[in-house]
Length: 314
Image (cartoon, rainbow, N blue to C red):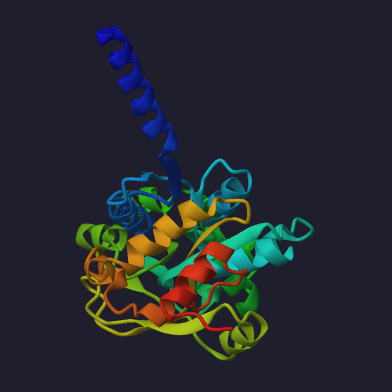
């Protein structure tokens, strides 16, 4: 009888464990903004005993969008420009559109930073980049995609660089300090530990990205918008930085279970005040911002959750 009871208890436990929904969130480098915010979302989601959320450090936007669609990841952080290109088969994904991509929630605005050593000679006039060692971005990152868009808009041929860096952003502060590169691109929520690390290692500046060419880019690419990195965000950057940015969007596949999507949305909405304190990039986010700048259709479960909360309207 005792043996039977133990066996039954084991069966019930196994059934309970198997009922738990395991979900993964692909982020970016550990010194960026995606990774800590992904971890924060997982911690909130894990308050729900029906799910088990884990965060993974990855190569960034392009890696995440591809692996979400392969179902290697449940969710992924992806820049809104990369979301747009993948859903529509444009830009880097020319001829490789995938309408199975779905948005879940807009996380925060991401602004493009051209981080340079102050003694590098690099300026907002991109002709100064000729012959320099500049880290455009690792393949599979939104940093690379956005940087090349700006280079194209400004008429700068990337092949004119003395060295086209493909380091991950996590490697860049040390490479900048060691003069292996003169600067690097990072599309991120500000402030971020990565650029703070660079600024404490050597004098840096962040270049303005503006002008009529950028105005024309914004007309052509509506997922871009102007933004400002406030002065004082980083040591040595004593001016407001005029730049452009996108939204960080959490995406998934259209086939992802409703329960998994609802768990993530509810984790954010039910703990919104706490959520905003979990990273400086979230501080100014309002609930209505969660459904703006998505670039791909909302997953039905996300749409239903936002409608229920009075945030999303047809």
